[in-house]
Image (cartoon, rainbow, N blue to C red; front, side, top):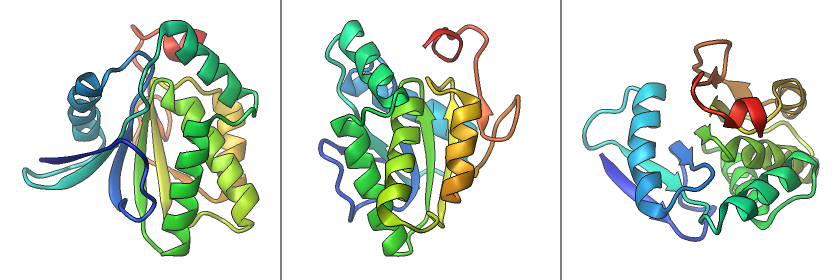
Length: 172
């Protein structure tokens, strides 16, 4: 598979499968995790292109604080960049299927909330699956429904693939 690492999110670059990394993931770990999570979420063939949106980790405390801010609606710069990416994709009629892993659950949900608020119309063509996400399902489902974003995949329920050994969806 071809991997494109985006240091700064370029709204013009994304279409198709997208992986957004979680808490305490350095760049190389994000790449490793993306292959695992994307193979669980899509039927990608060798040579298929997908994108990794890497949110650099600074420390456990900083990543937890960033998650908390997004969960409380205090939009972080990372969520704002992803929001810009979403609104640009929707206005260009490009489809995105996003896997939000760990911390990215809160970040992507906040990005969807503000993209819908700013765009003012349903975010058609955007789908998301949460893999052990740091997001509250009840709040997330309300935001997704309001924004017209579909959930895909999942084990426990549509759009959610949580690991019983991962503390993030249970604690964060």
